[in-house]
Length: 256
Image (cartoon, rainbow, N blue to C red; front, side, top):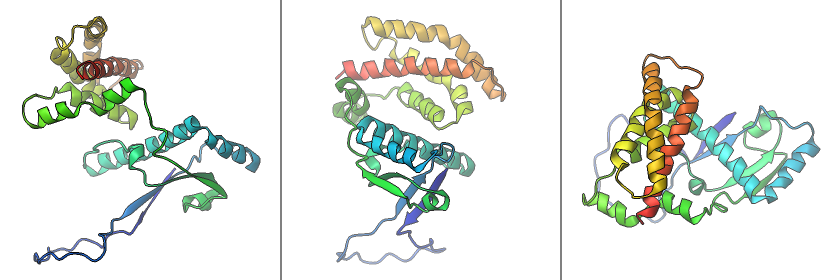
């Protein structure tokens, strides 16, 4: 269950825009609204208050805290994706731990947790404990030099670098039909654009594997375009996506 509230909400938009006026130095900073999201694990109730206390004590383990926060963000993003589908507004990027201003983890009862209150709770450092292995960190952050090159039209971004993360986002937020539909295009672009990008044995093996999976992905996408699917379709999409992500990640790392 997900409950959201907005603190410091802006007033309703005006039907007509005010005339521009001369800007003056503000005496106080501009205020912004903040969304408070409460994720309730209603499907996993505790047997007793003692069990809940034991669960809360596990937050001393940074890895466990990270798992709880990741699960909460996944729930939030599934809701964001569902809202995007219903409203027609595109869902941009997943919520990141670094964007959380404050996080609190606890337990309580019914209406209590629905209003953001707890029997017992701990404030946790959501933005800490996010250090990754060097190779993973390099792949995630990319190269500032390459970013500048793309912005300056000195280098072209590969289409697969946009398509593959889009399929991953659809999978992670429960939009499996869109993932099945787009998988063939994303994998095909990965093969075509990065075939000669690296002289690396692992790179060549992964591309060979993607080529083997491409005919099956074409069938998956064809079924998806007709609103159909078979039991193994999603498994094939996930497997191909993992290989394509590895190909793109390897290129980013080795080119830095």
